[in-house]
Length: 453
Ligand code: GBH
Image 1 (cartoon, rainbow, N blue to C red):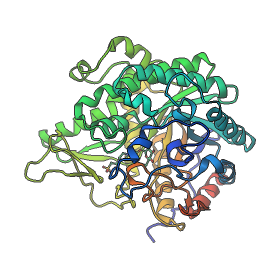
Image 2: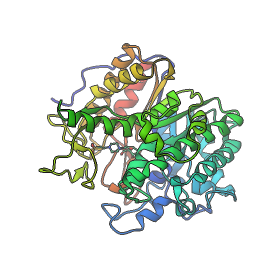
Image 3: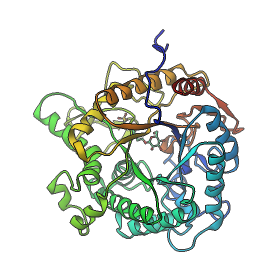
Image 4: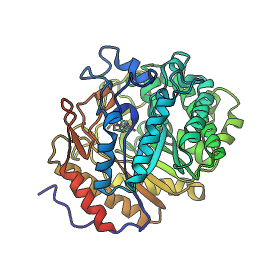
């Protein structure tokens, strides 16, 4: 049968960090409670047509009220760590200035609950929920937002830093830039194409400033979670190779190079960025303790073909003037989202990172990997995780220093522009009753983690 596991997983190092990931906007709900401010995603989902099934994250999984039950699930799974995100508008309703004590209290309770359950907290400070007042002032297109983000990081670290040694600054600035400001399919819904690039630079600057603030508060270990995947040229023609190279530049090198090498990958592109870029790069490239990678799949890219214009990018409508066009990867199983399943591209990605960045590459943590499938019986998710963990082990056997792996996600949740239609959870959530039911993959992972001990 196609989904049976080829046997026990290979052994990972004894101190390997096993965890699962979530984010505030996708699970918390309680958007109007205890003084939380509005986020750019609250504003975005209020516009008809932005989310496929017309839903929003007002309730989501109601984790804000059910976090004890969710921490109990983490303990049952045997997760060593839990990557969650702190909602910036819950802590600072206006984005800057006034601190909402009740918002901080929630994360305080959550951290204590995790520690009591023996699960290490790994907070991400920004997972896409920009406070709406800051978004209205230009969001990541303006430099002030980077400074506001660092001030927020300081507030959170001042409260949780006595119990939380490890932090993530940003989640996937590439997707925020591309999907949020470039194509407009995510909040804030701007369609600026290449004029979105300042959002990339200001997020990276925000990362650098927040990293400084976290260190000043005594943080032991700081990383970032970036979206990466290999880019495959659609053919060997020069046109297709150039198009694929540009896409790879925008998704991968635009974010990894400044962080790890202290420079932008392309002079022409760097010239389009605002501010004292050379000085900013010093902040952006401060040493990281580890580098987080969210891996989902490779992308096959070619030159736009006027005869067959690309209108769709995994469900995302694309403007015709883009200089690259995604092409289908054929001959692969697909998740319920339609994304191709290509585990060995994770090995390819990691060895390519090692080759490009060499000694400049800190240890890697896979901060997200997972898939959308329906049902509580989910043999496809088991096969997906099994195959990706083997691919990860292959990269480690080839000498790539990987220290941890986090499944996206603990719970079925609010999947952004897809609403509740896509289910990435190890735990099924009935979105009517909010009942949690561990899936077959939850039990599989629990047993696999036990076997590693
Ligand atoms: C992550 O983004 C997010 O961090 C998380 O919040 C989200 O819930 C999770 O992944 C699942 O989506 O196959 O060519 O259509 C992932 C960013 C962007 C990766 C779109 C996959 C699909 C490209 N994703 N991409 S294609």
